[in-house]
Image (tube, rainbow, N blue to C red; front, top):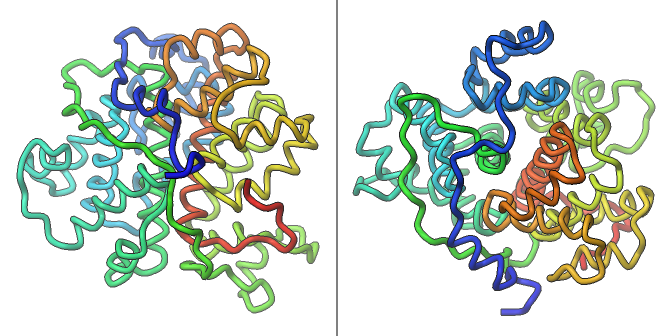
Length: 394
């Protein structure tokens, strides 16, 4: 297989041997010491997201909570999926990402949604269950997104027999959003709640970049702005500027209920996080390249140059290895690689990052990388068409 299609041997080995320590790297804010702002946010989001150590860890960074949790709550409670299908996808993602916290949190929710104890064990391949064909397809879709950043034609076509376009979009985003959440929980090592037990250990997993050619025809057709109803045009162009709207936004606009909370997350990462533009674009370009997202690369290579990355550095972001970077930059690039390969940041890399970033920046680093991994997987799967004169993928 060509070098550009696989991870480096070091990352592949790391993917099969991740060990999570018990000590949290970022301590959750004690419930008794929440500030008025933190308490207001906890009250606003705990009903759906929950009020455990995961939320209290995010409350270290209140602005991040405002930017991230609206979309998380949409995925958890407002999407077009049935609760059973939603929890099936979440648990499979928790298992694939080896996220003890996410797995333990959603076992109870899965049982409330109608999944049996044996079915939950089978999601982690610790029991045998005869899934119906459609639910087996959902599990396969979660696996493919995790391994290939893409859903194959066979799986997509099987999903489309039963799901409408809103459900198809929601199924993909359920896996991709929960992948981002798992990466945060794993990397900051959020402690399990009292009485919770760890998930079944995930089997060794062969991580690989997608070897299939990019889609040439969109699976989800972008909205044609001129033909769209007034409310969709207003959503896409609130100022009525008449500007061209990128295909990514017109694609996600096929699902207006999802569009709004997802856009809050996107705008937070791009305009409100505590990372410098240069660090943000390094992470976006590296994870876009790892996911083989031609659209993401084309959108952010020019943004990287505007943020101060040189042409040589942009080329280095599309190459295996870390030669040529300063020690500080090397830790940033390696963090994106490790999140892609192992769904967590290794201890040595975390220490290097901790030396140069504060707690809020560390959380923003995780959300930026996970958020653009999410978008890359969706762009690949939906077949979002390239913009005119796009920069070619390396």
